[in-house]
Length: 239
Image (cartoon, rainbow, N blue to C red; front, top):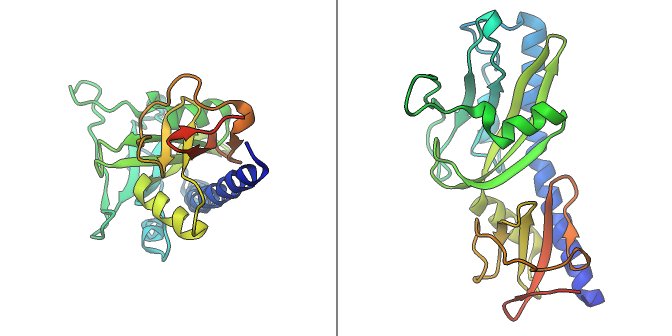
């Protein structure tokens, strides 16, 4: 990769990282609200942990997320079942509403969120995580990125705070921040799946071909398991 190409992909990576951190600021505010609520009222069956008013974060100017909230760690011994305290708004505008997937273990449509990567990784590692792109089948029906972090109080693991960001909205904000680009680029996750692409040949959600790019030709995005590659004449640039 040329020096100019390396500088350009580093600039894009920094811009991606800035947007990711912007989303995690929102996630941190959800987490802090949960901790205040748990400290004040504890964890009780039949009572929401997430305080009123947190959902209004979705209405803040420049907000990237279309969904946010707390995914509660079940505690059967305390009578606390699986529960999503999650608010969502249509990406094109509209009223806020709660997300209510089927959490009944005996149901054919049972949604076991404890088995999802966005829940399990923060639970196991104690670290924040960025998952996607994936189709938001229980909400918007669009490709989204889900960013989560664990919530741990004196009573232990409470659950994960998180936010859903539509890939298209993330891309729009990124390109607006970057301005003119000399070459298209591809953002890949640690499964070699395209997170975001400005090259028509590489579609969001698709798997990159084996051997596309090398560690020397990619730039990691700080804070998330993503890497960036430039595209030249339809080809991913290699070292």
